[in-house]
Length: 488
Image (tube, rainbow, N blue to C red; front, top):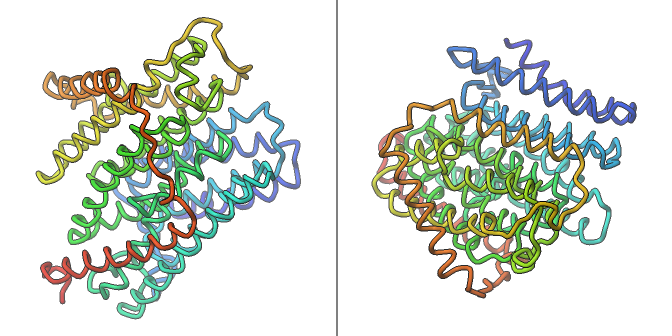
């Protein structure tokens, strides 16, 4: 298994460069890499015990492969396959598929890293590949959005690297377990970098513009898997170190409320989806023990929604209410919206029930409010007018193949935790969805509130990092003071 893992890690980078040399095979090579990752994830699920690989013992550089990794890796595989099919007839160049493969491989690497230095390398490769995909259209707007993403990411990773060095100075090891007993400022710096990369809380306000202005397949990858490269280490640390768990849960709740607070008022389809991505990442962090399954569900459904948004006749909800969309497109939109709202028979229901069962008492009210906000947000899609032969763009076969993979994945994943189906567990989500729909039809559909966007400006995003660092330092310092498990 060790040799298989090392070969699997290296393969995307080797094939990525081969793809550029053999442009006539670009789509097939990219598809093959994604399918190899899917096979590897299934191999992980077949193993009863986790695999630990020590690469550099003296530095604590190691890999950990377990079911948590498996959920994130299978998400990356399915989303990448769907995006490749979506782009199959789009005349994308070999450069696009090369960067897609490299991005896929570097994201996978973050899902098995168990130390801060190899994670740093993987995150930096992700930043470069994501920037090149965002800027792929080569328009002034695309290049600026890509550079903005790169600048914010690199600034965050400078903070992260300083924290990682402090952990090494304390323990002579970069392993995640080094957070225990490390200086408060080291933990705060590392968490700041990961919160920014993962689009968490106010540190994630770079995300709406970046995801909404990118091409739909790139938005699908960014929202479906790329930002989870920053979320996964937070989940891993919360599960490894019990003293970290309350901090992660706090940011999970805060993020869920912040994202949905923006989403319910947003009038642009892609911006609404981007804000809701922030909110859903909060659900992943709110209950780390089931974060892997929630990440799988969210990755599939949000990628599907961004791809669907790319074929709608308009991005403006007001305009869509007067332009009936084609019924088959509307059906895919409704299935995805039902899943993310927590409707039974789709994996989104199981993910929300499992999350609710693993919340701490102080989280329950806030997360119920976030769930209600989710139902309100996606009622905007569900109640759009539709008719057969309605307004639509020319839909390629690749789109339907992508929907079959992503929405089919939501149906298949619904069988993973079938034991959660009970009358009590079914009634609560249905009531929440019904209340959300009523609130939308009676209140939010008529509102014209436009929330300010100044907080998304580049200079404000950098300034927000300083405020977040102060907040993180105070939280970690308080945890240090009252948690004997830190050994201070």
